[in-house]
Image (cartoon, rainbow, N blue to C red; front, side, top):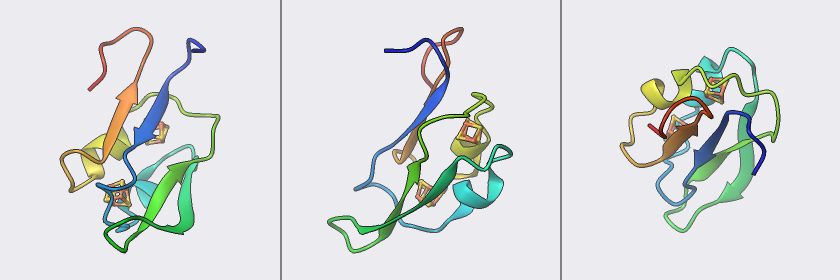
Length: 76
Ligand code: SF4
Ligand code: SF4
């Protein structure tokens, strides 16, 4: 794994509210356009450019939908 920060979105926990997409200062989150098994259009990471700021994590109302990995920190 590359030693850069990145978010992990657990697609079946996502409710598709879009808060993380709106809040990300790097604009690296987007709608996947796909439904998860609960019927929500889940968010996804574009794949690069995450700064590891955790803003998506703090804006997500679902407790298990996003984790952020940062090389200098344990996963949140
Ligand atoms: S940690 Fe920050 S830069 Fe990375 S996806 Fe989340 S909000 Fe965007
Ligand atoms: S804020 Fe959480 S629930 Fe809302 S779209 Fe992002 S990951 Fe999904």
